[in-house]
Image 1 (cartoon, each protein chain N blue to C red):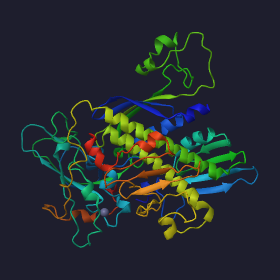
Image 2 (image 1 turned 90 degrees about the vertical axis):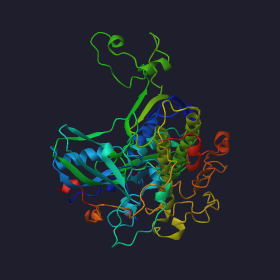
Image 3 (image 1 turned 135 degrees about the vertical axis):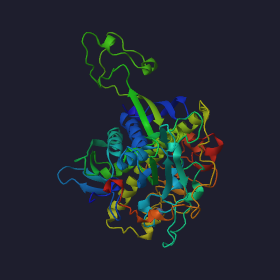
Image 4 (image 1 turned 120 degrees about the horizontal axis):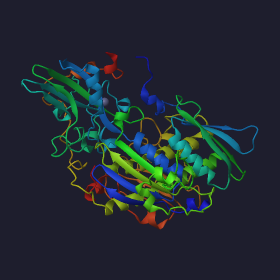
Length: 389
Length: 154
Ligand SMILES: [Zn+2]
């Protein structure tokens, strides 16, 4: 029982394609694997059309029908974490270039044939700025965007069929302005980067976590999955081991194209760490009772007496930048460090640094693997190691 | 119309505390910890991690109501450590596991070549999009869309 926790988790990627990754996770707890599954499905931000202003709709479909379909069109969301703000965190009144994208749809049919209105007709245009309103503090978001950011996935890409929105006949017209916003799938499923996540463990059902209904024979009526090849089939006379725990988890993360599979998985892990780090921060604040949110000590983090929190001379360990306070959600932007020596004497620091090269991301108390690795799924190296999403 | 903003289900409000610890008055070394704006994703993972730690006598969590965005985590320890401290340790351990996994994923991804041509979807190219004020044939018409309005209002 205890041994499982002490082993390093393992991962083996069985297949990596443009829109999907299939991997096997080992030496982790069922709850842990399930949390990873949940987080990639529901907690990773993307952009999707959220508001539609309809100017002309003389098609057979009602406005809300089309608006709903537009919302579901996957838009390119690479580096969404830094490339766009949430409107709720933005200083603007009703959308600005830093928190919103504008897509125009303007199609009319003058032809005798039926015409398809597809996601290829969506044109990304610069977000109109309100001359009345003083431009909100210019963010760095725009510089973080790839050239395709906000474009419908696969637009004008050969071999990628566009998403059909509506069919129109001669004399019908569709003209609308769509505002796309950043969001997560907990709010609406259209923001999920995943179209499907398959998750399996114990393909032989040795653990009896499920009960198979059958008429004559389980074996004949329940064909084994492909993953069954990875595990030893139970012997005929094998006794039920009620202490056994699942240890191998078969994942397939399939994305809708808004993010690549690698970005989805890596963001998912980062998001889980953020959740945990926020919880630690919440616990740290607890004993003192009412620490005000604008207390510089808290925002600029840790009491000086607390040696275990590594500030590292970096600017801002605990996300002073995040408007919600606490752990910065955009942690890769500002160099943020988090460390705790609470267990064991060794200093362990969890650091992620972004923009300025190198991106050391190591954690763990002197654990050779973690310490030796300098990498980044953080910005710059991403381009060099064939990171595409 | 008068529906609460959907993000209230997962974003802490201004000044809202994410964690509330209530120590148990009847059971020694026990506490109930309310974790706000989080769900099974965190709750179940923490529960499992706590149960694997030898100092923990009891750990359990529940989401009392699906419409209330918080969960309760009950922990009892053997007295060598407080429930808060063990929870913090559990978080630290999980972050460690996660970071180890991150490293391994990175390595695995770098070994694997994406099968099938990868379109130019990378985050590489910069700029292009969004320079304000370019020729916008519709003018600043988007201004009349308040944040709370969406197409459902029609
Ligand atoms: Zn804005």
